[in-house]
Image 1: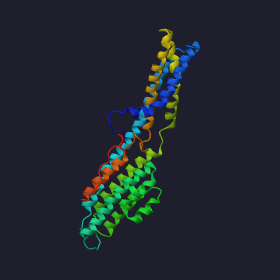
Image 2: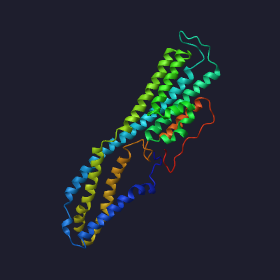
Image 3: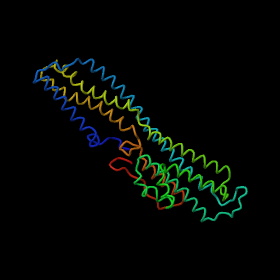
Image 4: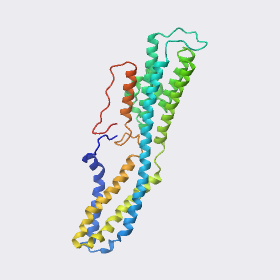
Length: 322
C-alpha cells in the first residue's frame, strides 16, 4: 500500500512512460500525414469523438468503482482479522485458567507452567494462522519457514505445510485443542468453550471472504472492454482534434500533439488505477499491506503473553507498506 500523500514523479513515470511514448508517436504521425503529406482526409468531426469520450469516462468510472470496492472489502476483512485475533488471544489468556470446571473431569489443577505452555501454543498458532493466510493469498509457500514455522511445533509445521489449505487446518487444530481443554482438562466451562469456538467461526468467515476475492477475478467483460474502449478513443482523439486546430492556422496543427497526449494520458491513467485495484492480495504497490498487518498482530499478541522482545513494526520501503 502506497503511504505517501503525494505520488513521487518516478512512480508516475514508471506507469506512464510507455503509454506517453505511444501517444506521442501516434499524434506526431497523424500531424505529419495531415500537414506535410497534405492528406486532410484523416481528419474526422470532433463531435463524435467528444461523445465517445463522455461514454468511455462513464464506463471506466463504473469499472473503477467496482475495483475499489474489492480493495476496500479486502482491507475491511483484514481489519476484522486484527480484531478477532486479539479477541481470541484475550479469551485464551483469560478463559483458560487452573480451575477444573467441567463435569466428569477428574484432573488436578493445572500448574502455572502448563498454563503458560498452553497459552503460548494457542496464541502463537493464531499468529501462525495470520501469516499462513497471507502466504496462501499471495501464493508464497516458499516463505513458510520464515513466516509460519517459528510459531508452531516442528511436527505440526511439517504436517500443515503439506495441506492444500494450511490456514483452515490451523483453525481446526485450535478447535481440537479447545475440546481437550474442555473435556479432558476441565480448563474451560461451557460458555467459555462456545465463545471461543464462535471466535474461530468468525476467523473462518474472514478467511472465506479473503479467498472469495482472491479466487473470483474481476469480471473480465468489464476489464477487457474498458481497455478496448480507451484505446479506441485514444486512436480517434488526434483525428478529431487536428481539424479543430487547423482552423486556427496551418502551423497550429502541431498543437494536436500535446493536447492529444495529455487527454489520452488522463484516460489511460484512470484505467490503470482501476486495473491495479482489481486484486488486492497480489503484494503490489496498491494492495492490502498484509505483511505489515501480520506484524502488528504478532506484536500485540506476543505482548499480551508478557513478552518484551518483540519485532518492530514494519516501515514503508520506498513509500510502500507491504
